[in-house]
Image (cartoon, rainbow, N blue to C red; front, side):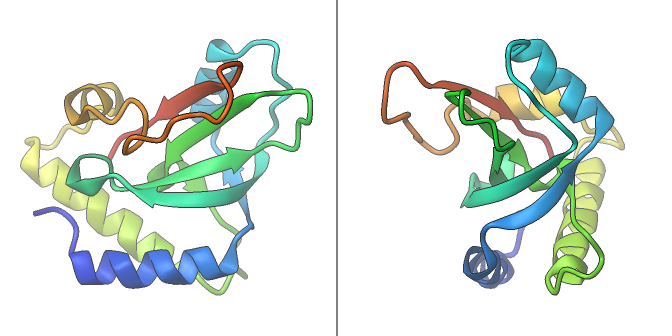
Length: 145
């Protein structure tokens, strides 16, 4: 078991109570998202509007809002791919979770954590059964440790 269920439940409750939360998406993740949806207007800053737990395979997943009203794309990424401001009251708890999760994944996979492999093997292509409300909505899921 990678994640402690009790710890996850408490962290998820605290995150949900604080939503929406401002976050920063890294250069590599942003490049991947832009490649998948070139027509979208994406920046490094975004808001996390929802969190889900995808089990040990996917961990905590975040729904990102890039404040692009024209976009009908839903972006879902692992919380390990976003960073938060240090002044965020949950920063320390989230960073602790991310560090432990990555460390445990590396240990289980012999030191190598592949985002693509984690996503493929998890079967979480639709993030725990999440289905879009309208057929015109595109979902981009990027998950890893």
